[in-house]
Length: 250
Image 1 (cartoon, helix red, strand yellow):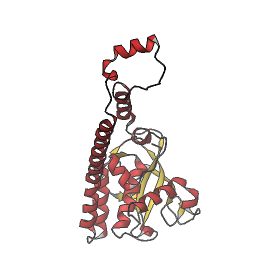
Image 2: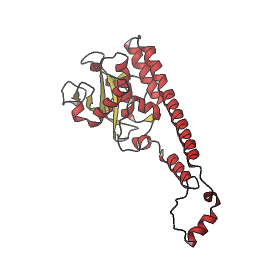
Image 3: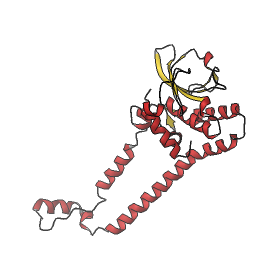
């Protein structure tokens, strides 16, 4: 299921520009061979005094502008989530469930972890996924889980469920969904990034639960048989919980 845009190209271009005519030539006193003189004469721009302080100020100013622009873009990406959470706080639980489910299904574009993060398996926090604008199945489930906690849905009613899913009549594929239990032992509702409709698990015969977990426990399938502490047994879950809490989620 492990399954980041390729952002290295922009940095590579920046480094390339910085290495071709935009840095002062290295100066080594007492070493001026005929070859170096010929090279220096072929590059008249580098023979002129280089205004290092001014150049540094220009580069630092440009970097500050880029950082400010990136910060504004990041905030623009997450602001709709804060507005949504504020807006549904007083709504009934079914309304909160559907609003948050549809929000992430429509805001995040599906992409494998290799495409989104450049890693084989990466679990993004809610704000990471929104800022990147893409993610895979666990990123949707994680974002919905923490957002529902933020609007008052008890953790005991929510579980992230690792399943094997049959897609397009092909072989079973690893997949993750979020399950909502209206009450203990009830047929849970399935929040799946593959479809906008929220339906009971009994109507999703294409899903075969393997294990489920939340911030309070780890279970075999979606039943009541515990399987240990998820924070100890699931390293990526422990990591993403820490990231989400640092973002203000509980």
